Length: 145
Image 1 (cartoon, rainbow, N blue to C red):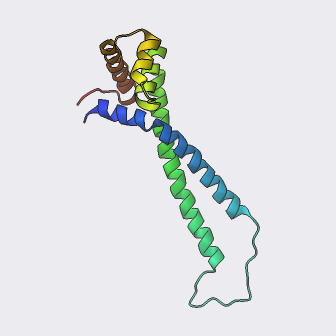
Image 2: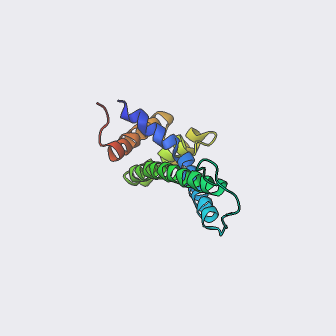
Image 3: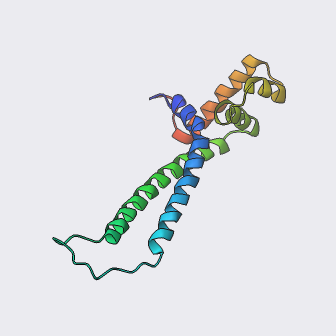
């Protein structure tokens, strides 16, 4: 497995994962509010063939949906924690390089970094590779297998 490519993928998806965590958290909270709202059961209808009421079906469906969302939330949170651990293992300069190369990626990011750090373009790529290797070791513990 190419762990460097995996690291690049994790960094590129970091902003998306942060947004996913916020969205999933909001959806889980919304389901909690909906399921805890007071509703009454309608007893004036007979159940046919042991069928459940729409409300019971809705509650069961929301429980299943919430469990699924919580699983996705846990997975996204784990990915975010891994990336944050990797970013915490590099220097400020290396972090800036990784952020602009993979996370933010503004227009002319190479020129921006060369101006900020005072590097030639080839030297910048050298430092990017070093930062990415450090990041990969911190996140996955290996560089190549």
